Length: 109
Image (tube, rainbow, N blue to C red; front, side, top):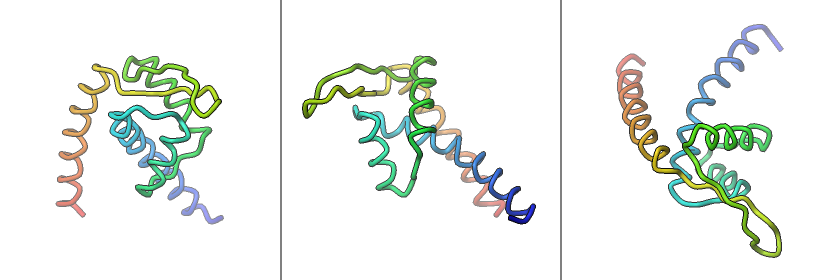
């Protein structure tokens, strides 16, 4: 892979990382379990690997932005996640920030 492709891939991953956090928070306004969340994101065109999603969910929960609980569904235990009150407040602020950045980038590009 050429050096410029490596640079592009690194920058693409950085760009996606913040966007995926915002998408995950937005999707968790409705309670979902991990696999269901992955499916919902994929349906919107945002693929995310399990190896990236589950650590992100744990980190967001540790930060107080999500709550979770284990429940049995379809004869399997699943961990369900939902935005906490703090998460909702952060999502509102991040959404405003995203829109401001997006408006600026639209103008620049």
